[in-house]
Each structure stands twice: as C-alpha cells, then as structure tokens.
Length: 229
View 1 (cartoon, rainbow, N blue to C red):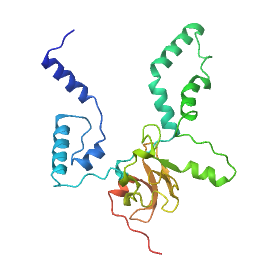
View 2 (cartoon, one colour):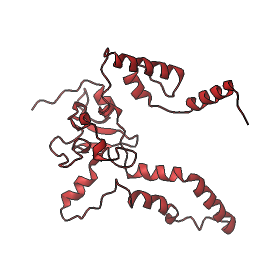
View 3 (spheres, one colour):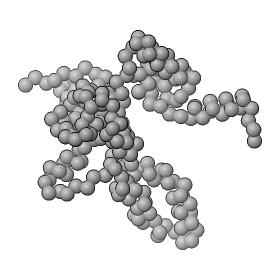
C-alpha cells in the first residue's frame, strides 16, 4: 500500500504523539512540562538550540542529578520480562492448553530473563567477598556505564568527569572510582536510598524538625540549610 504525502505526515504525527518525554526534565530545560514530542516540544527545542548556537544561553548541565533516573536489579529484570512479553505469553498459553491448570507456573518460568541480567551483563559484578566492605560498596555503587549507558571509557565526556554540585549529599565525595571510570561511577552516601520511582531519597529534617524521606528532585528545587553543629 502506497501512502500519500499527507497520510505519511499524519502517521508521523500519530507516532510522535505516542512517544514519551519526562515532563520534569522538559520543565527544567524548555520551561514547560511537556510529556510527548509534540509540535510545541519541537518548536521550543529548536529555539533553545538556536539560542545555544548564538551563545545567548548556556547549554543544559546534562550531568545534573535533576536529569538522572536510577535503576536497580529489579528494574532491569522487569524491563527484560516486558521485552520478552510476547514470547512469554505464547509459552504460557501453550502450557495452559496442555495442562489446563497452573501447576507449570514455577519460579523458573522467568529464569532466562533473570539470567540475562545477572550473567553476561556488564552491570553485574562478581564480588569475591573477602572483605565485608566489598559487599557494602557494591550495593551502593552507581554508574553511567554499561547497558543503556555509556559504552566505553573513551566515550565519557570530559565535563562528566568533573564534580557536579547537584550530587552533594547524595554521593560520597571521598569514595570515588580510582580508574578510567572516574566521574561516572559513584557511591551512594549514608541515609540515601533508591525509591521505586527511580529517584534517590534523602533523610532530611523538614521545617518542623521532623525527619522525612525526600526525593532528589524536590531537594534540588528547594532551599536546603546545612544543620548547625
């Protein structure tokens, strides 16, 4: 089937409308909380690029923690299962048709997806465990390298190796990677946790003096005072 020029334009518009961009990020970079690649999004992005080219505005700090999303083992397993959803659905349908019950549904059903994350993945790390602190370090390690991130140390931009002030309080400033991954491999600081929404949460005191877990976006967009000693 051959599409006309207008049909191609309409199909492209529908496809772009189904795309998703983070409204929190676009609010920071473009000034409006946009959630899809709409004509308005393209217009604002193009205008921003022209201003950057004319040196009227500074480029966005892409290493700022505001633009970061933190993924853990559970997120990667979920992602691999979703990518294999069609095959898993077909396999489950065949099992149900054969046995007419759910006795076949065991924990091993998702083993291939789990193995693909744990084994043969550059993000997985084999810990020898001679020193207990090695387990602690590995559990708190955060990196931009690996699957879905920067492919090799040679691809790391120079500015990404610098200290970013937005990471203050979230990453340990003393514990850094002593390798070619300096700047892109960090370690989470004390009283900091990863939330289910892929944000970092810090235990802080609110205005009333009560301790609360607050996400990194809220903290970075708020006035924070260092407690007096």
